[in-house]
Length: 164
Image (tube, rainbow, N blue to C red; front, side, top):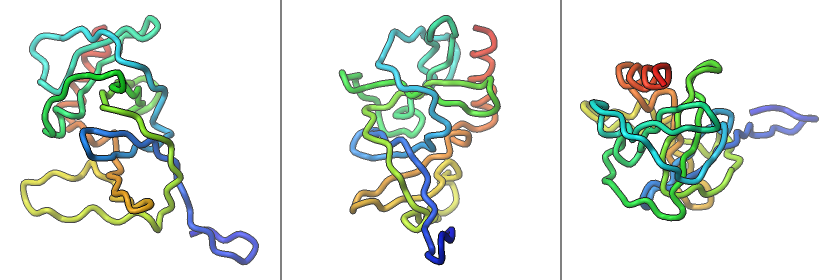
């Protein structure tokens, strides 16, 4: 909470919201570089299934991860709404694309609309979920894109980016 002229104002952050199947997710807008329509992705042999491959983005080759496969929500055919959200992971150099079913909108979400991630018990990994937002009756899972990939998985993606 922040105070302005004697009134308490809830801090808000901007999130890009998108769909994976019927679920809505959000990414901190400061991590998003751009959104592009689907372009041909070149598959790279011997990479994990969730790594779709690499794309040439204006002369820069970047790795592309399919969040549907990473989150084990099932594969889906690309549609005219499917797109790649280009995100910055760390520093200025690590950039990757994430395939999403549909980009929705940019929302201002206040901290009082965000609840902690529930504890689902041992074996359920949720460290990449920053929290769960309840906005106008919709549940939005807020992702920490830096933690979506494990250290080993991130190394694979960074290696792809540097070799390209």
